[in-house]
Amino acid sequence: MDKLSGEVAYIAYHFHWGMDDILEMEHQERHMWIKEISAINKRINESSKQR
Image (cartoon, rainbow, N blue to C red; front, side, top):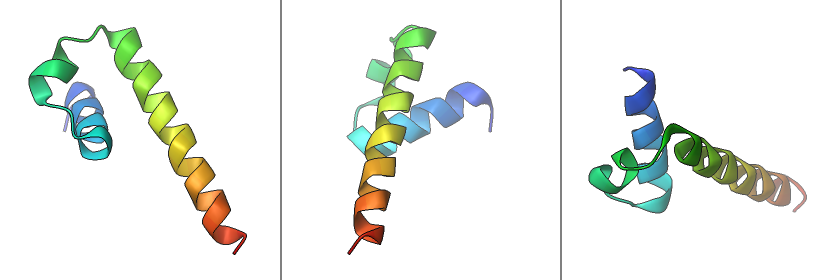
């Protein structure tokens, strides 16, 4: 899988956005969303470990 496909799959999986919407984004915007998703996942994982 190439890098773009991985980015699209990651965002689509987590936010359920369509491929066309994700592909219309600039590279930097996709990376902003990837960072945000990663931060959300990190907070969720840390919260579940504390229980």
